[in-house]
Amino acid sequence: MDYKVKIEKVHPADIERRSFEMITEELKERGIFLEEEKAPVIKRCIHTSADFDYAGNLVFSENAVGRALEAIRSGASIVTDTQMGRSGINKGRLEAFGGKVYCFMSDSDVAEEAKKGGTTRAAVSMEKACELKGRLIFAVGNAPTALIRLYELIQEGRIRPELVIGVPVGFVNVVQAKELILSLAETPYIVARGRKGGSNIAACICNALLYMLCEERLERNNESKV
Image 1 (cartoon, rainbow, N blue to C red):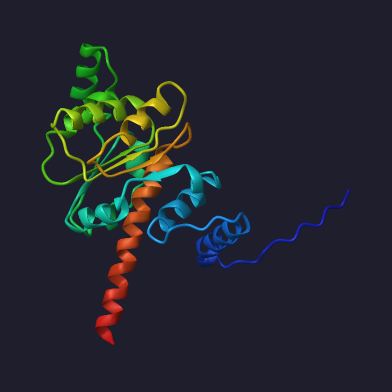
Image 2: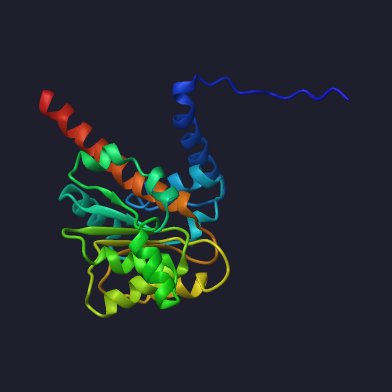
Protein backbone atom coordinates (compact mmCIF):
# COMPACT_ATOMS: atom_id res chain seq x y z
CA MET A 1 0.00 0.00 0.00
CA ASP A 2 1.05 3.58 -0.67
CA TYR A 3 1.37 5.53 2.56
CA LYS A 4 1.63 9.30 2.34
CA VAL A 5 3.72 10.76 5.12
CA LYS A 6 3.81 14.49 5.70
CA ILE A 7 7.38 15.55 6.43
CA GLU A 8 7.86 18.88 8.17
CA LYS A 9 10.59 20.89 6.48
CA VAL A 10 12.94 22.32 9.08
CA HIS A 11 16.34 23.87 8.49
CA PRO A 12 19.07 21.89 10.33
CA ALA A 13 19.95 24.91 12.46
CA ASP A 14 16.32 25.16 13.61
CA ILE A 15 15.71 21.51 14.55
CA GLU A 16 16.40 21.95 18.27
CA ARG A 17 14.35 25.14 18.47
CA ARG A 18 11.44 23.43 16.69
CA SER A 19 11.74 20.42 18.99
CA PHE A 20 11.34 22.62 22.05
CA GLU A 21 8.38 24.36 20.45
CA MET A 22 6.74 20.97 19.95
CA ILE A 23 7.47 19.99 23.56
CA THR A 24 5.91 23.24 24.78
CA GLU A 25 2.85 22.67 22.58
CA GLU A 26 2.35 19.10 23.79
CA LEU A 27 2.75 20.06 27.43
CA LYS A 28 0.02 22.66 26.94
CA GLU A 29 -2.20 20.08 25.24
CA ARG A 30 -1.71 17.78 28.23
CA GLY A 31 -2.67 20.59 30.59
CA ILE A 32 0.82 20.72 32.10
CA PHE A 33 2.18 24.14 33.04
CA LEU A 34 5.75 24.24 34.35
CA GLU A 35 7.24 26.67 36.84
CA GLU A 36 9.47 29.13 34.99
CA GLU A 37 12.62 28.24 36.94
CA LYS A 38 12.21 24.49 36.39
CA ALA A 39 10.93 24.55 32.81
CA PRO A 40 14.32 24.60 31.01
CA VAL A 41 15.50 21.56 32.97
CA ILE A 42 12.32 19.55 32.52
CA LYS A 43 11.99 20.39 28.83
CA ARG A 44 15.59 19.40 28.13
CA CYS A 45 15.02 16.04 29.87
CA ILE A 46 11.96 15.51 27.65
CA HIS A 47 13.97 16.59 24.60
CA THR A 48 16.72 14.09 25.46
CA SER A 49 14.39 11.15 26.15
CA ALA A 50 11.12 11.95 24.31
CA ASP A 51 9.52 10.96 27.63
CA PHE A 52 6.93 13.36 29.00
CA ASP A 53 6.90 11.53 32.33
CA TYR A 54 9.76 13.82 33.36
CA ALA A 55 7.22 16.63 33.62
CA GLY A 56 5.86 14.81 36.65
CA ASN A 57 8.65 12.73 38.13
CA LEU A 58 11.41 15.35 38.44
CA VAL A 59 11.49 16.58 42.03
CA PHE A 60 13.31 19.81 42.92
CA SER A 61 14.27 20.92 46.41
CA GLU A 62 13.45 24.54 47.22
CA ASN A 63 15.41 26.93 44.97
CA ALA A 64 17.55 24.05 43.67
CA VAL A 65 17.97 25.64 40.25
CA GLY A 66 18.85 29.06 41.62
CA ARG A 67 21.40 27.65 44.04
CA ALA A 68 22.94 25.47 41.33
CA LEU A 69 23.26 28.43 38.96
CA GLU A 70 24.94 30.49 41.66
CA ALA A 71 27.38 27.65 42.36
CA ILE A 72 28.32 27.30 38.68
CA ARG A 73 28.78 31.07 38.38
CA SER A 74 31.23 30.75 41.26
CA GLY A 75 33.27 28.04 39.52
CA ALA A 76 31.69 24.83 40.82
CA SER A 77 32.86 21.57 39.23
CA ILE A 78 30.73 18.52 38.40
CA VAL A 79 31.37 14.92 39.49
CA THR A 80 29.67 12.15 37.52
CA ASP A 81 29.38 8.40 38.07
CA THR A 82 29.99 7.42 34.42
CA GLN A 83 32.30 8.37 31.59
CA MET A 84 29.19 8.59 29.41
CA GLY A 85 27.77 11.26 31.70
CA ARG A 86 31.08 13.09 31.69
CA SER A 87 31.31 13.05 27.90
CA GLY A 88 27.76 14.37 27.56
CA ILE A 89 28.31 17.50 29.65
CA ASN A 90 29.29 20.63 27.74
CA LYS A 91 32.73 21.02 29.27
CA GLY A 92 33.58 24.15 27.29
CA ARG A 93 30.65 26.03 28.74
CA LEU A 94 31.41 24.82 32.26
CA GLU A 95 35.07 25.78 31.93
CA ALA A 96 33.97 29.28 30.89
CA PHE A 97 32.73 29.66 34.47
CA GLY A 98 35.85 28.08 35.97
CA GLY A 99 34.57 24.55 36.58
CA LYS A 100 35.68 21.08 35.46
CA VAL A 101 34.00 17.70 35.03
CA TYR A 102 35.35 14.72 36.97
CA CYS A 103 34.70 11.00 36.72
CA PHE A 104 36.85 8.59 38.72
CA MET A 105 35.26 5.36 37.53
CA SER A 106 38.22 4.38 35.33
CA ASP A 107 40.91 5.18 37.91
CA SER A 108 43.04 2.20 38.91
CA ASP A 109 43.05 3.14 42.60
CA VAL A 110 39.24 3.25 42.59
CA ALA A 111 39.04 -0.21 41.01
CA GLU A 112 41.56 -1.60 43.50
CA GLU A 113 39.81 -0.11 46.52
CA ALA A 114 36.41 -1.38 45.32
CA LYS A 115 37.76 -4.91 44.89
CA LYS A 116 39.44 -4.85 48.27
CA GLY A 117 36.34 -3.51 50.03
CA GLY A 118 33.82 -5.67 48.18
CA THR A 119 31.93 -2.65 46.96
CA THR A 120 31.37 -0.86 43.66
CA ARG A 121 33.68 1.53 41.87
CA ALA A 122 30.80 3.99 41.81
CA ALA A 123 30.67 4.07 45.61
CA VAL A 124 34.45 4.44 45.91
CA SER A 125 34.46 7.20 43.30
CA MET A 126 32.16 9.23 45.56
CA GLU A 127 34.66 8.79 48.39
CA LYS A 128 37.49 9.96 46.12
CA ALA A 129 35.49 13.07 45.30
CA CYS A 130 35.83 14.09 48.94
CA GLU A 131 39.47 14.92 48.15
CA LEU A 132 38.47 17.60 45.65
CA LYS A 133 38.67 21.24 46.65
CA GLY A 134 36.05 23.82 45.82
CA ARG A 135 32.32 23.69 45.22
CA LEU A 136 30.89 20.49 43.74
CA ILE A 137 27.77 19.35 41.93
CA PHE A 138 27.16 15.58 41.73
CA ALA A 139 25.41 14.14 38.68
CA VAL A 140 24.55 10.48 39.26
CA GLY A 141 22.79 8.83 36.33
CA ASN A 142 23.68 5.17 36.51
CA ALA A 143 24.71 3.68 39.86
CA PRO A 144 22.39 3.74 42.88
CA THR A 145 25.39 2.66 44.96
CA ALA A 146 27.00 6.01 44.13
CA LEU A 147 23.90 7.83 45.33
CA ILE A 148 23.70 5.75 48.52
CA ARG A 149 27.37 6.35 49.34
CA LEU A 150 27.00 10.05 48.58
CA TYR A 151 24.07 10.21 50.99
CA GLU A 152 26.21 8.56 53.68
CA LEU A 153 29.11 10.94 53.06
CA ILE A 154 26.76 13.91 53.39
CA GLN A 155 25.36 12.51 56.64
CA GLU A 156 28.91 11.96 57.92
CA GLY A 157 29.76 15.58 57.16
CA ARG A 158 32.58 14.62 54.80
CA ILE A 159 31.13 16.42 51.80
CA ARG A 160 28.67 19.22 51.19
CA PRO A 161 27.39 19.26 47.60
CA GLU A 162 26.01 22.41 46.00
CA LEU A 163 23.54 20.14 44.19
CA VAL A 164 22.84 16.41 43.88
CA ILE A 165 21.36 15.32 40.56
CA GLY A 166 19.96 11.89 41.41
CA VAL A 167 18.74 10.16 38.28
CA PRO A 168 20.11 6.59 38.23
CA VAL A 169 18.13 4.23 36.03
CA GLY A 170 17.22 0.63 36.73
CA PHE A 171 15.70 -1.63 39.35
CA VAL A 172 17.89 -2.81 42.27
CA ASN A 173 17.90 -0.12 44.99
CA VAL A 174 17.25 2.63 42.42
CA VAL A 175 14.02 3.92 43.98
CA GLN A 176 15.41 3.55 47.50
CA ALA A 177 18.60 5.46 46.67
CA LYS A 178 16.60 8.35 45.24
CA GLU A 179 14.35 8.45 48.30
CA LEU A 180 17.43 8.83 50.51
CA ILE A 181 18.42 11.97 48.62
CA LEU A 182 14.86 13.26 48.81
CA SER A 183 15.09 12.96 52.61
CA LEU A 184 18.00 15.40 52.83
CA ALA A 185 16.96 18.66 54.47
CA GLU A 186 19.96 20.89 53.74
CA THR A 187 21.30 19.57 50.42
CA PRO A 188 19.82 20.94 47.16
CA TYR A 189 18.70 18.20 44.78
CA ILE A 190 17.03 17.40 41.48
CA VAL A 191 15.78 13.80 41.54
CA ALA A 192 13.90 11.71 38.98
CA ARG A 193 11.56 9.82 41.24
CA GLY A 194 10.99 6.18 40.31
CA ARG A 195 13.03 3.92 38.01
CA LYS A 196 13.65 6.26 35.12
CA GLY A 197 16.82 8.24 34.47
CA GLY A 198 20.21 7.54 32.98
CA SER A 199 23.60 9.11 32.32
CA ASN A 200 22.13 11.02 29.39
CA ILE A 201 19.52 12.55 31.70
CA ALA A 202 22.17 13.47 34.29
CA ALA A 203 24.22 15.17 31.58
CA CYS A 204 21.26 16.99 30.06
CA ILE A 205 20.27 18.44 33.45
CA CYS A 206 23.80 19.79 33.82
CA ASN A 207 23.62 21.20 30.30
CA ALA A 208 20.24 22.80 30.94
CA LEU A 209 21.78 24.71 33.85
CA LEU A 210 24.79 25.71 31.74
CA TYR A 211 22.63 26.91 28.85
CA MET A 212 20.51 28.97 31.24
CA LEU A 213 23.67 30.73 32.43
CA CYS A 214 24.94 31.27 28.90
CA GLU A 215 21.61 32.83 27.89
CA GLU A 216 21.77 35.00 31.00
CA ARG A 217 25.28 36.16 30.08
CA LEU A 218 24.21 36.85 26.48
CA GLU A 219 21.22 38.92 27.60
CA ARG A 220 23.45 40.90 29.97
CA ASN A 221 25.94 41.61 27.18
CA ASN A 222 23.16 42.73 24.84
CA GLU A 223 21.78 45.07 27.49
CA SER A 224 25.21 46.63 28.01
CA LYS A 225 25.37 47.48 24.29
CA VAL A 226 22.07 49.36 24.33
